[in-house]
Length: 453
Image (tube, rainbow, N blue to C red):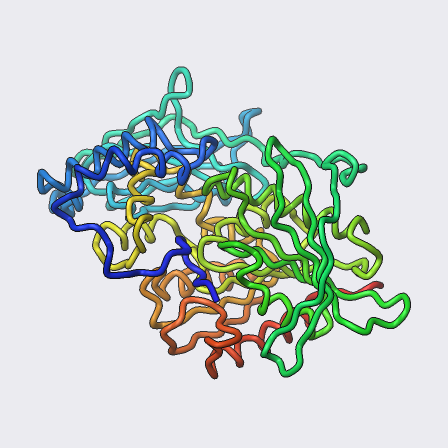
């Protein structure tokens, strides 16, 4: 079983030594370029440049950033739509160099006020229901810096949010994406007892990449004409490594569509989310066969793939009846702060992925996009699962998401447990907690997943 974590490599004793950090830059640059992804917002001036600056700062002793002890200041401003209308209920964020966020929610006139901001330079960013994330920009789209001074109030220009409009998908999606089945076989799992499923592997082309990681798992011995609720599983690492999990859920009477990141996308979670949206749309349109019921499915992901799901949830809108996040990322800003303070264990060779995104105070969009705590009102019914033993993504990520979902009035269920795992362990890694969380997920899908009307 593969760990559900940002990186799919386990922590090991062969991690590189701190003293050799600068000498590793040359060979890590190609890796970092792939990791960040060519289209990932916020990777400016470049992932390699961001990492080089981080490593130099560590050698000079200026990294991690020191907490400011100066008297804070205040930032005020407004958020409006592209046609100049004020946007109420938008969340505005400025982040410190280490990622620590300072936020405010706009009032009816679109205005905001963020107090207690440490002196320094910041690029404000915002998001609102129905609107895309955006950061304050100057000429030629260059991030516009706002300087906060002690005891002073700084007024920022209006922050303009475009309407969120995901790319429309064609009605003949299977034809356009050249969907084709590449295999069919039977798979089994040790849990639940005698679990088995019929599996079909698929491949499709979309947005310049060939996606060969889609699998359909169906219960065996299906009655004629049987149709099953759809469960979409978005895994953080190769889909076939998670086969026992997929089989286990199919064995419970679900049509399981499973997907994992495509190498061509790097870690561009937005691109992976659009791939998942295509897979979801193909399944709902009947392109994978008539065993999938006409329902609004539930999606599940964990750790890195929770960031993919966060983007999918925005793009899919009401197409999903609920979602499950296991050991997931909820606030990338506080995740960055945990990284810079040394509270996270990030496996080699991905320990420089956070610095590759750039300083959060200057390039907040990459962090905001993967922080569903700030657009929780758009989430469907939510099940949050997390272990207190998690050192890759601390459990406070779950607590923060739960608070945001509850405040937004979204149906919420949680399962917090004590375990050493960071993932749903099935098979050889099955624990009592893993068994209990499995059935909690099954019950959640049965409760919110809708079979054919």
